[in-house]
Amino acid sequence: MKTILAAVAAALLSFCARAQSADELSKGAADKSSVLNYGMGYHLQRFSPIDQINKDNVKGLVPVWNYSYDDNRSEESQPLVYKGVLYVTTNSATMAVDAKSGRQFWKTKVDYPPETPRIVCCGIINRGAALFFGNGRTVRGDI
Amino acid sequence: MKAIDPLTGKAKWEAPSDIPRFSGVLSTAGKVVFSGRLTGEFEAFDADTGAKLWSFQTGSGIEGQPITWEQDGVQYVAVSTGIGGVYSIFSGDERLKNVPAGGSLWVFALHRT
Image 1 (tube, chains in turn yellow, orange):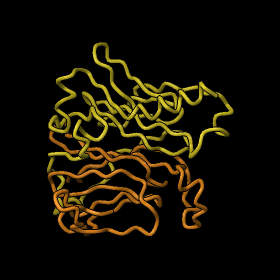
Image 2 (image 1 turned 45 degrees about the vertical axis):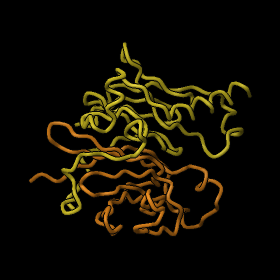
Image 3 (image 1 turned 180 degrees about the horizontal axis):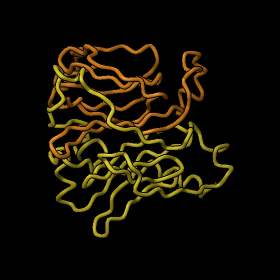
Image 4 (image 1 turned 90 degrees about the horizontal axis):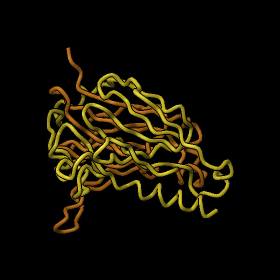
C-alpha cells in the first residue's frame, strides 16, 4: 500500500517538468520550438506567443497525424516537445514520437501492482514526463 | 469556461458547458483559446469574445492539456484524447455513456494547399 501511495504522489509530482538546461527551461513559451514546462512556462500561463494560427484562419485547422496510445484509461498527460520529438505518457507507458510524422521512436512500458486499480481513486492516470538535463533522460511518475 | 480579467476578477466572456470541462486550456497570441470536451470535441474560441470558431471530434473524451509549438515555420497544436477520469467514472452522467474509451494523441496545423 505504501508503495502504491508513493507511486500516486510521484504521479502528482510529475507535474513539474525538467528539461535539458536551466537556461532552456527558464525561456518557457518564449522558446517557440519547445514545450519543456508544465503549463508552457514557469509562469504556468498556458500562453504561447505563436500567432500563425489566428482567429481568422483557425477554421482551416486540420489533423496532421494521430498516434494511438493503445490504452483505455484517462489520458491527462501534457506532451513535452524538444528538438522535434514529442514526449508523452499514459498510465502504462512513456513514449517518444516524431513531431512531424507521428511515428513512434520508442515506447517504454510501466508495470504496477495488479491490485492498483482497486485501490487508487479516480482512475489510473499520468500527467506527463520531465526531461532531465545532462544526459537526455526522460523521467516520469509510476502511474 | 470563463475569461476572467485578473485585475478586476470580472468575467469578460463565458462559454458554458452542459457537461463539466476537464480539459486544460491553451491561449495564443493569435487570439485563439483551445480546449476540449468530455464528449470528444477539441475546440477553438475567439479570445476576445468567447465565440466558438472551430471544432474537431477526436474520438474519445478530452481530459488532456493542449500545447502548441513551431517547427520549420509551421505552428502545431497537440492534445491527448481518452476518457476515464473521476467525473466519467463516478458521475453516472448518462450523456457520456456513448463516449468510447481509447487514448490517442492528435496534432493539428493549418491546411496547406
